[in-house]
Length: 180
Ligand code: NDP
Ligand code: ZN
Figure 1 (cartoon, protein in one colour):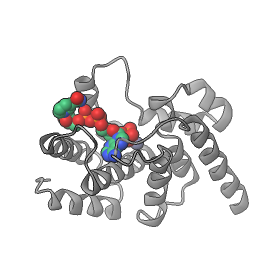
Figure 2: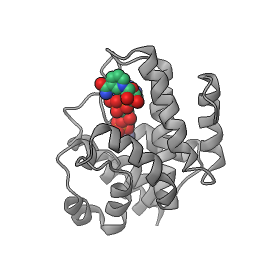
Figure 3: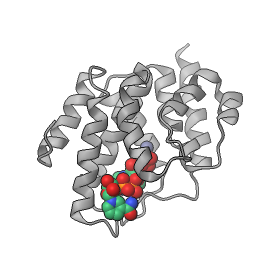
Figure 4: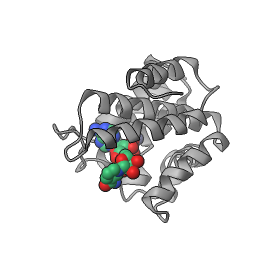
């Protein structure tokens, strides 16, 4: 059974790498986008102690619908409905404005499934560490700080899910002086 899981994980990494192939992160080094979903999956396994296959699959695929032409139907066809539904739980609704999306994430967080919360916690942890490491071009210190404060409001609705991830997030918030 383990070798089948390894093969499934690699199939997701391959799919995501192809979908994100022309995208870059917002850091000044323009890191390849795929570093992010792989890093989120790595946080889940190595820091969160998570080995649930669907959670790792969803982590690798979590930005494909939001940031590429990938559709829900395609994910259902290739990875099955459960993984596709998990990805949709962590996907922003592009019909909403940017401010509405940010508010929706805060309000929606407590109502998502345990598995989706794990992906969200690791996603936030990765992005906040990235912002602690380096500032994206054209971002002011105020914008970075606002992002930390908004993230803390999202994380408030994800708590009670994984102590190791929540402790790691709290360390990042404390470092930035953000009250939790
Ligand atoms: P964005 O949503 O534009 O950017 C953050 C997102 O970009 C992350 O959630 C992450 O999403 C992705 N990302 C890509 N590269 C990186 C990286 N190196 N580090 C971290 N994240 C990365 O930011 P916001 O618009 O939310 O800006 C934060 C705050 O600043 C907001 O409160 C906003 O009101 C304010 N602000 C916004 C301005 C604007 O032009 N939008 C201007 C001034 C202030 P993923 O995980 O999905 O890849
Ligand atoms: Zn992400």
